[in-house]
Each structure stands twice: as C-alpha cells, then as structure tokens.
Image 1 (cartoon, one colour):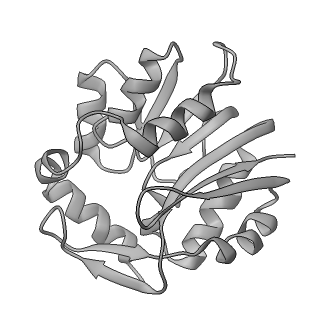
Image 2 (cartoon, rainbow, N blue to C red):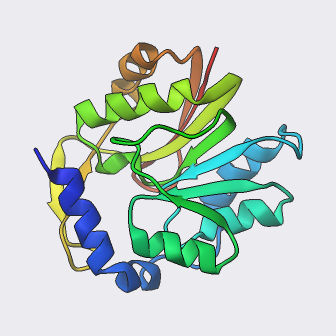
Length: 197
C-alpha cells in the first residue's frame, strides 16, 4: 500500500468540512470514559501531546479538565482550525518528523488505524522514544482483520488497517513498551494504553 498515508491525508485535506460535520462534536460515552481514566492520575503539570488532533474536540475536552496539551496534525487545514480554537498546534507527520519534546502522555484517537503494518511499527517506536520514564501512549484502532479503502464518512478514500487485540503485543514489545492494556469498547473499537519503562 505504498503511498496510502499520503492519499489518506489528501482526502482529509480535501474533505475537512465533511469530517467535522460527520464527527460527534462533544466527547461522550466510551471515549470520555477512556480519556477520564487516562487523566485521573496525571498531575496538572504533566506534558501532553495529541497526535492527529483534527478539529480539536478531544484536546478541548482535555484542556477543560485543567491540562495543557500540545496538538499536532498532518493536515494543514486542521492545524489552522486548532489554532483558531486557541490550541497550541503544529503541522506534524509522525512518519516523517521527529517529536519535539518528551511527554508524559501521548494521545492518538483514531489515527494509527490509517497506517500499514510497517508504518504502525515505525510510529510506535518513535512515539515510545518521546515518552518520559513511565509515560503512556494511548491510541485507538478499529477491530477486524485485513485492510481496506473506505469512502465512508467523508466521501473520499481513506486507508484502514484493522486489528484484533491479540495482534498488538508483538508490535508493542518490539517498540520497547514495558506493559499495556487493551480494552474493547464501543462496537468494533480497541482502546490501547501502553506504558514506557
């Protein structure tokens, strides 16, 4: 699937408004519970980074909880939207760019599911290196098997690689994570929290 990430990003850039319109505007349900659990034991001074923050829904909720969070997205239009909402944001592609700092929590909701297996492994390794000792990477994936291109939600092709919980430990171990939790929540979603040594 050479070039799949570039094509997916092009689709997001072209259909940004469709993505915003098709996404729930507020954090609720399983996503809210997941975020709340991630924040529960973090001090207010914790360093947080959201990868693929899109229009900032999750970051805005985290900020309302009293945390400072740095946002990043690989789509320029999303970065402009984030900044317009008063969020600290940068243009960033984890596959090609280096993370700027060390963080206590890196959050990536429905982002890594757009990567091929090799890209996923690369991203995990880079994100692990950007975590403080004991820091956590939290990300979500769609359950299932195989890969697909889908025009759903935004009317333009996006690449997806589906996962089952048992597929993930070899990748997490190879990236250097010390421990992890994998939960099934919402229909067909996996929520992963991986901790650095």
